[in-house]
Image 1: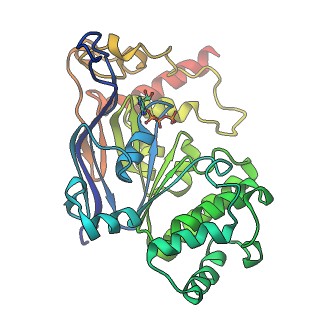
Image 2 (image 1 turned 45 degrees about the vertical axis):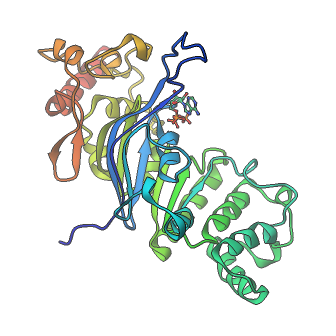
Image 3 (image 1 turned 180 degrees about the vertical axis):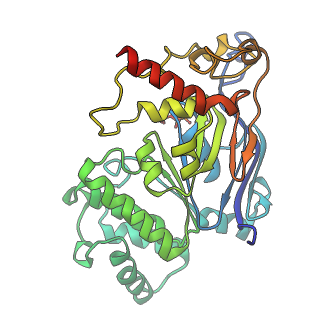
Length: 347
Ligand SMILES: Nc1ncnc2c1ncn2[C@@H]1O[C@H](COP(=O)(O)OP(=O)(O)OP(=O)(O)O)[C@@H](O)[C@H]1O
């Protein structure tokens, strides 16, 4: 099998916010490490789900991909070139090629601009100057996102949330991107509409060979359309694998915890979930060791829990495509099974 083509490559990317001194050099603020030594690739035509709780660094990673934030350290390569080295035409091409779609379609559209105005700005950026060229591009684009051309002269307020998200997608597509970074694109929508929009992503990805980074706190969304899933915890990439590896054979105790906390729709699911262990300790009180150790259910049963406090686990490959950052990843599945049986017996 040939190697997949890599669109983005992130090498040891760290992003810190607010890590500076005041004007007089006093009160050095601790700052926030939103991303901590993240290395990952995005392949041509794949959907990469990026999951984790609020504050885990998902949006920051997405903003680094589109060039809206710069890494504090580490490298970001786009199609083989470091992003910071892009200039002139190559930089313009990068800005068109990588588009971001935001969560809230009610705030991401200007209420005073019709759909036609919105799309025309994108077509102008793509270099379509003549009215006839833009009309033809518009006639091609609207059905792709499931909208009628009759909507072109309406303002955003005339549309439902799902329709607005279709307009936002159409706007992103005007410049013919090769990568979409979608930041919680369905979480502001009614559940009944979410599947329609996710299906639209699936269709667009197939028709346009798009690479998509799907940022979501909802594992059901990631499960629906991802080829691979990356799990972030406190800015660190703690597990990476194919959709099936993560959803069915996850090895990091945090991923197991996320999966068990996700609504399953199963009324018989155990209420006494053994792997929900307390709240997170503030990050600045946890230097060294594993970032997840304070909430880790697996650590409560392994033979050498001190190791978790002293030695930071590195992301290590366990099988083809699947890696996890846990010293005891080999024991996760068995330990989870034992705990679940115990919980069911004591319920
Ligand atoms: N511009 C900023 N200035 C300071 N801190 C920031 C900034 N952007 C993000 N952070 C901090 O970085 C950390 C990661 O935030 P980020 O928004 O990337 O997480 P997230 O996983 O996308 O969370 P959410 O789902 O809540 O959006 C958080 O602690 C956040 O407060």
